Length: 223
Image (tube, rainbow, N blue to C red; front, side, top):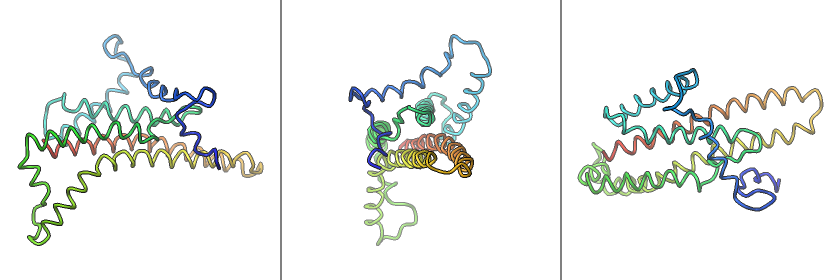
């Protein structure tokens, strides 16, 4: 049990150098070269979900400008690739560290807040008091909304980190116990592992989608 969390250690076991972060760059190797490659099934498979995300993010942002959604689509692609690559054997899951998730969430939140309070100060003040709030509850609602705004980067990063850690720990525990089970239980354990791997693949995609959608909603509030 003392070595259970070694799969989340960013340093290698031999040189004690944090080289495992380089696994985050492996996603760039499988991305297609858009401008130098002819249309094929691989590029079509990548472009169709990205076009769907572009339409959905434009609806959330209430704009038809295609460039507005490129940042959030890139964010979704980065998180999804890192989550899926973390499911492969002997690959480090960078999104299981707050160092990685906070690096993405905190600058986004700071830029949204700075833009909103500088450009749209009156609308930002109105967000602190929802419509229909009784007069007596207005001071409390201001405190609650202020706290909720401050904890947004933490909730974004912790949600992604906790989901990645929980899934990997369950898979590690089941994998360690598979070696000691009887032959009759081996097939059942393998089926459970395959089902859990399928679930974790879906969670990897969903968590990237949730992170990008929430970031888009936060951007739409200050615009």
